[in-house]
Length: 558
Image (cartoon, rainbow, N blue to C red; front, side, top):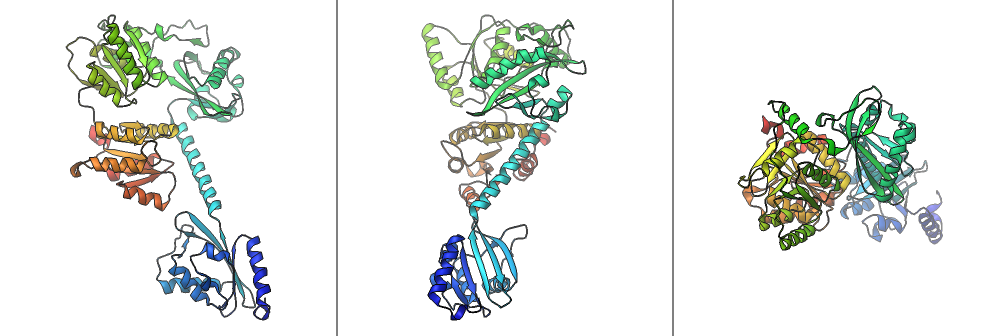
């Protein structure tokens, strides 16, 4: 290195360029007077400089000035970001780092590019700086960190669910259980992982459940199993086990979620059977109504419901479980019922019914359906109710009877507990949050968090639906995923801003997968008020709502 200034320049340059290519990085060599002896061509693609900036004999100060002027002022990675410096102060600070014996830093340029700098100063005074682009490595590192955070949030959500949930792989071995599932079976979590149902359930139970589990894995058709079970401590409880398949071909998983309905049903038990099937048809309306009246503070004797024997009810829901539960309740009340799963099926069914002279008395429409279903109901002149969720609860039967108790029933809105029915044509209840999110897992996470915080909400699976729901429901705030189908989040936000009035502006919060500055800027440019990063946490949402909503749902109730 000491002979470098007097060596053949061409040979030196060729050798150093070869080294630069081999290490896929830029090489800068300088002497004890801070004069550049060699700068590889790779530096030109890594830094915003011209060939003159790395020419032999150029001062390091002039080289760093060219970097600064080209917009390449570095931002250090880590918790201590560089303070804002003027040009001369920044150059002086950089030159000082070149004189240190050993310096290794990672610097960020822009929002998605990272460079590593390895600087060495030899005892002879000569120095070398190696510059490498490590953007792909940093992106993988960030993605890994994001995935780990998402897994941790998912595990936290599962562990805080108030009902047992378990996940099994394609070989039906347990890969995850939440705390409630472990408590339900009175076993530690470690007793499940890597084991099959035969290691957990009695042989007669596993013999019955195993073919059902395999059928769900093979066909993808969800199953709902009413069960009367005896727990290890001897207590009995009635549950509905919801089984469904998730994942992709070759990597399917079986999810089982158990819903406790002990307080909602009456079932005879001879005490001799450890586990027996509970038929929903055996749950009498008298028992359901008796519980409802007792809860309301009235007599425990059941009040007879108006007969629905001559009524025809059409259920509109794309969710098989929800429509099945609704049809079970309607059938128990003696009414004729059938279900359709889309707007097209609804239109076709009503057309055929009209041609056949069949009158439909009531449409029961899942709130998650396309809003055009409700518009079509209005145009058809058929009374319709919108419900937020089909669940096996006594209130649904009671309120369904109220809606059909007579032809002169006025449009009304009934709200009790967490069950909500709204007659189409009346004013809908105030909606707190509209969530525009197309990913099914994220939809579940949002719903669980918002339910826990006490906010009413509706999920829109694409940008067009988000605009429609905003138009019809006037939510207090919108959580807008930016990667939506049909209209992306930016386009949907611009559409809403173009339609709203200045005195009726709604807070729109962009939901971003990564913290890239360009995405934040695009959110603000499209009319959004703020951004929040995935994975979502209850604390982050609650802080966001405190900033952008004047009143919380609990304050409204108070």
